Image (cartoon, rainbow, N blue to C red; front, top):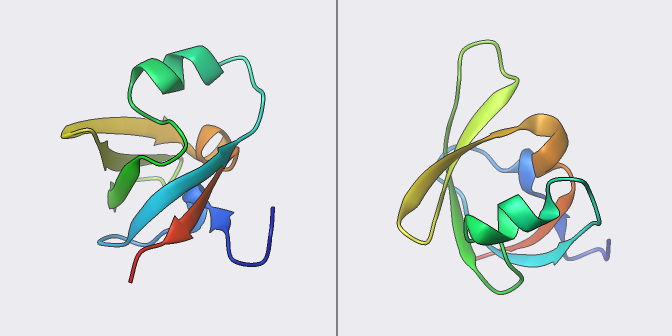
Length: 79
């Protein structure tokens, strides 16, 4: 991860970012099918009670991801 990127899991509610890079993981194909691909716009909508899940909007769809999966996705903040 470069200095201008952060993990998707670090976004706060309302933050917008561009996906920069995705680490190899067992869920990579599933995530890509859901729209999580380099260059895609993503918005962090909210954290679910308990904090282990977060809701992200990508490709006009709301997707819940566990923090572990979101930590494998690097993003660049949109200003």
